[in-house]
Amino acid sequence: MSKRLLVVDDEPNLLRAVAACLKAEDYEVSTARSGHEALMQLAGAVPDLIISDIRMPGMDGYKLARQLRGSPRTALVPIIFLTAKDETADRIEGFRAGIDAYLTKPFEPDELVAVVNGILSRVERTHSQIARLVSRSVEEVPINFQDETLTDAENRVAVAVSRGLSNKEIAAELDISVRTVENHISHILDKKGFSNRVEIARYVFEQKD
Image (cartoon, rainbow, N blue to C red; front, side):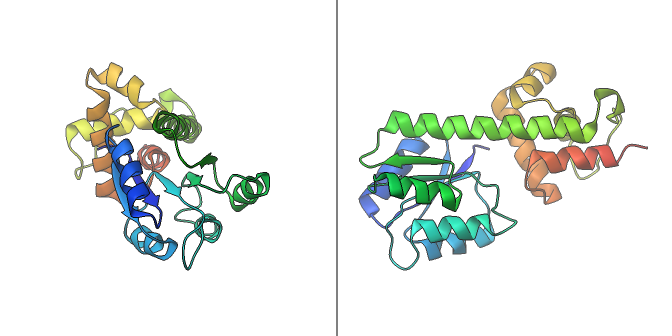
């Protein structure tokens, strides 16, 4: 499955434009018209990345970012501000609230996509590095790992994740597409109730005899 993004903005035309731009890149995009609506959606599912305006009724972007950073469920979710506020003080307050990037309106679609891709790639690399630390070494990973709730393919992908391999490396090793690897990882996360690949790696390692 593709990465899941949440776009938060009270301007419907801008919301549609941003969503269309990201959907064209095969991202799964959901939208919210306010900070409160975003929090309601996040109570059900946590996206891979959030893009938010600052000026919104009720709860502005700063308050939303601080609340997300204060919750264990969303503390590590990347946040991008996409806003018409372009003063240095606005940027500083945004970064103090915990955002990862700051873009101004009117936005350049190519720039937005590049920033989103860059952040998500960095997150995947970070998770892969942590997974390597969790497993400690390739030799210690249980090659015969088998979870009956997972398919054979999902079990193989889980072991590869526990070795700290990236999606591209897993695809090359198992001779499958990157999209198929993403689908398997998404299914593993859903079946086991995990939130990221680091938890997959820890789970596989814990099954070692």
